[in-house]
Length: 318
Image (cartoon, rainbow, N blue to C red; front, side, top):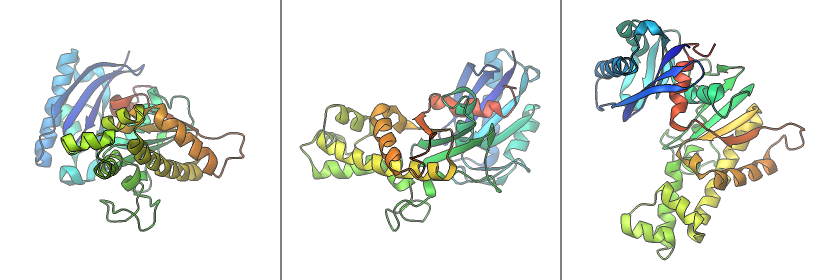
């Protein structure tokens, strides 16, 4: 049995795990990221978390194939620097190289969404596919592209920013500065924002009553309202699904992958989300007359995808 250390660096927590060569997590932990903090402080927090994870697992650095880390930003594969991670205040910082020096083991890094896709490809719902797209629906819309077992990261390690393709010209403003981006319509944040607006307009609806009591309608509130046949919630969700399916159709038309998986918090809607998305895509995809078409499914590894994908950078599965 071989072991690797997977690290998933998030804005609020740094998660660590020992991953085996058969894709199992045998030990895990997390520490607060501690923002705001300098890049040097974030590095030392990560080093401490890694050392504690090894100690808790009863392993030494010599027992590992190495470590992999997913960062919420762009990682330059040639220089092992985090070129840009805006939420961390990190620009051109040699985080990966420094982490390797501190731990005394091989360390590789990549974008966290890319590594989540790699995790699903290696040990999750994408296993066995020759090509895979992962679309993650959370605060924003992220993604990853896997082709023949390798991450497609583009000429500058910044590919797969699915959330920032425009699906409604001149539409809702996006945090990137453009208008009408996929993220402005298909993120979890977009869904709850539209639910809040609809709830304020329909105070007698189920989501209207939730909004009156708490001032916000969460994803869980929407899911429950859908199960109880709330008309206002359904109207919001139907519009959300339409835009989500339009973006997914665009991605399929461009890439035609074996599989496209939906991850992130909204994937917890399961078949309520998946079935109407599939129907829309079936209608609008360019390849609707082809004998073989992309299989659309739900990602299976949930919050472990990034950890397993990070560990996969060490070649532990080979």
